[in-house]
Image (cartoon, rainbow, N blue to C red; front, side):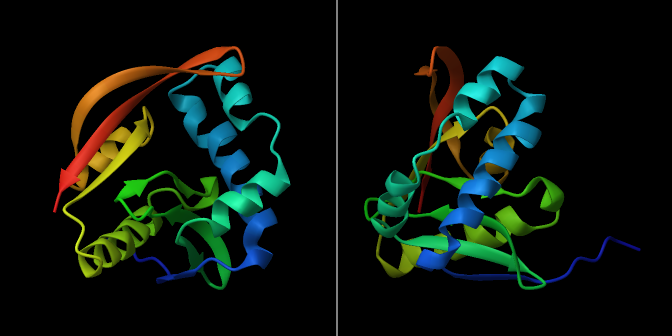
Length: 159
């Protein structure tokens, strides 16, 4: 028998979600990305988080929240030009279809909007997920973050 998981429900972001999403981001970076980045790198990435900037960032573009059993399990966004800036899944929900549910939602929205491509800057941790979903690497890049340098990959998927 295969694994069975509780269904993932994807909904639009609500302003009341901001603290949960900030916490989920920090936890995902510190616990999940740790397998691909050093301790210093994940601490720099998770770093000091400005709540006011998060509020502005989340309301500035369509953002989607994934719930499992009514609890926030992940989130993502889609900018009008097809850029996916963030796709994060809580450490406790890795490998349970949350990222795929979010991506399928993004893909449907992108097609509804008539976008010709999706693109992202995927971390070492996220690269395999995006490759499984049809993205190809355009270029590797090293990004300075709070005194550390993090490798990520510019990737795209033509729709």
